Length: 479
Ligand code: 6PG
Image (cartoon, rainbow, N blue to C red; front, side, top):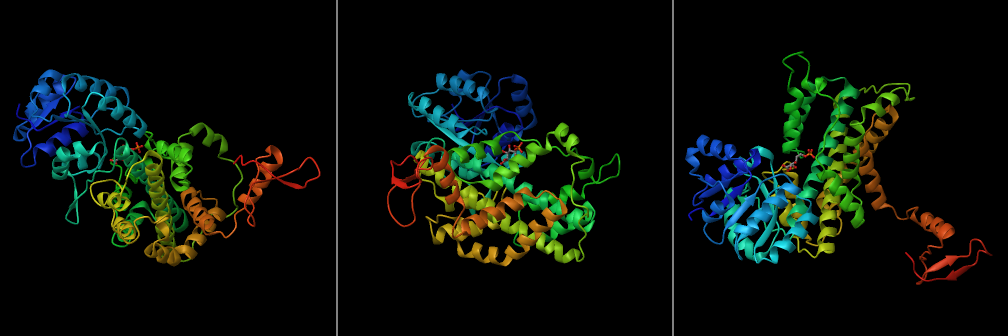
């Protein structure tokens, strides 16, 4: 045995992660894939990596020094379970199995529990950054036991992206904590992408600028407070011209957004936890709406406003869109961190929100300057209940809110869908409200179902005898 780490599953993500591992001082990497061809190809194409190929699980286990450590990079779901079963068969107590796929955190909790009974450590690890990140430096979100972190920490630190001198990896928390945080990362990714798409749409329809001209706007934005990977690649996509038609590529791409499910998981989980991640939800639903061509085609002639959007001062409008985008982005991140906080409380994880924001500064899809501001906010107040109430964000929201409101009004007036912009603003105003019409909802619930209500002026639980004489009585609390 001479490899200190192994990778199972040699599709693009797996082979890139294996190459990344092999490129770092001190690592010898064992590789295994279900079909032999992929292993042979990887070993042949990358002699510099010094891979130790294995062609059976027994051989794979024998090639690893103890505690054996293997990262699984196969499809989430059934294929992952199948590989875990095989590794459990050939590994021994104290060894470490890492699942680097996009697993649902509840599956990771289940798997960790089952594997722990064998004495083997199981670590669910979020890996972000796509193919390039896996090869050059991803953002890594490992969960699992403290014991496994002792072995894994140095290895993961060696391959992670580096942001401001710090590796983008931290031990997130036990069992499913890493995959939970990765899930929320993806939810925020959906919101960020939708907000950028809405900004592009408004600018295009409001100013008539071409995609190439809007690419310049995004490139300019990327030099300011919006600086981020997603803004950067947006400019690249908008500038791309289709070789066949000579049209902007964005105009020949079918406007139906795909999704592999992590955004939906974020929203489903938030619904169960009672966390209002409305921006992430709208972003997820916007993808769903786009992907129903039959519904869109029968709806095309629905009445809309008479006049198209016609902006008088394009530069001023673009600046307002930028401010609206930034304010909505603050909301999306605030909601995402709220979900992590609530998940940690529900599942008993001790998650350092500031550390999470730091490991997202590099390597991952949502990497951005902005995450430094979140790190600052949690450094100042680690138990901040609402991220957007941190002084820096209050200032930014104060600076942007008038523009934000005008952009949402303009979009609604012109019949341009801006679901993420609008829902973020509604969330912001909901949080700010002195009184919410939730009081009326409580009244309605009490009317039709005797669900009871609380009063603002005295303790206790009450019910009005709606079908009787409508006097109020004290009641059992039914929520
Ligand atoms: C990452 C990404 C990645 C995700 C893709 C596709 O962090 O590297 O989040 O894990 O799978 O972005 O997601 P959708 O197909 O759902 O858009």
